[in-house]
Image: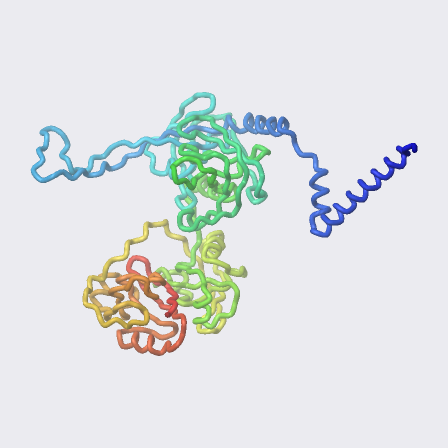
Length: 490
């Protein structure tokens, strides 16, 4: 019996067509069919084409990348020696701090043909001497034009002309997964280039990252010495300034951070103009809202920021009537979503501008007009002092603390804003108060909506909680100010 090859081929083609149709139908049903086909049809660059792109960017950017050597004066730490240990005549006495010169290295990028260079504040901010080595081997002295500690940006300048320079790009257009290149001098190895992708954008690192920076995260290798160097996209544009890494070993572990170019551009413009950055502020300390605080304040909104304290009696917020416990929901027509967002929105406004602020107080929506002041230079937070009062009252039991009345002398010594309340003595380990973050020396001014001026007020407020599962305490901590802590009761 003969075999009809034509029919077999037709059958195979039919089966193949059916299989393909079935596969596409399944893929479409899963919601990925069209996208998958479109992705498969895209013309992806070959390894050789990608390599040539890297080479082209390197040739474009490397001439603008510089190595920065700095000299700082630091104080030598005292060395404590046993009593009676002999001193050597003619030499500095042990135990006395002696000034010494500390040397460091970093990176930077030229952004104008007349020698302006961007780098990190932690590279050049405290330097007595700054020396810049160019890609062509020249070494030139640089002077500091201005610094901004809050974004870790510094602007320095060398006396030269017709220099190669890099252009700042639009960091808002960066997408996760996009290729980027990091340039700098890791471990002193000048003109080093590493490649990676954008791992994340808008990364908030909390207090470590500062109030104004939402970082670009990348897995491009960044190591000590890379600080201040540029992070560059595939168009050869500077999209960030490398600033820090997360590492257990001190070296690259694939988690590096860069300051976005759009923020750098704002800071650069002000440093170039006046040598400093001026920002507006309300003059208050914001705190994240929690469900328990919202219930205590009878607030049903989704957003908002709690005012834990106004910074001073004459601050813009205080003059406008804002006070601790208010919930800010809108500033200058913009919804308020978080403490960081509130700070950023206000900082971008002109100093002296009068803005409308909407806030909740005692369950009522109110508004006021605030004339913005100039944000003071950042200072280190003072450490909380012990109140020095060791006399402790009976333990209320429910919270797991002992308390005493706040005396006027203790209030003055602790420099408190409110001179009445109860002082926390012992905090029982693993108690509700301990879990909430209450500390020895804290002064409690309010339990939910009930003011506390002495032990009797506090005991009555605690007793009135009954079977309530949560309580919000308004606490003043020396050197920190007002806090709102939520205690979950057992």
